[in-house]
Amino acid sequence: MQIEAHIANRIVRNILLSILLYALPVVLMLLSFYISGERPWEKKATSRQVSGK
Image (cartoon, rainbow, N blue to C red; front, side, top):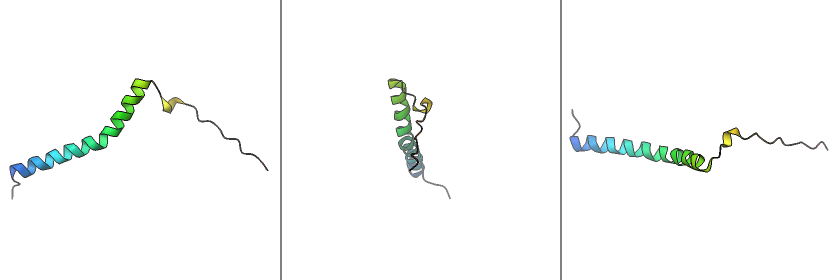
């Protein structure tokens, strides 16, 4: 049993749209890091001091 051409095209289009929607926030985040010059992964974590009571 074969899938009709317009149904197969719709499935492919929906898959590509889903991939785009999942990847868009990551791409925008990386673009904002590139434009601003920020590199949060290189910042040293600040150490919290625990007060001994």
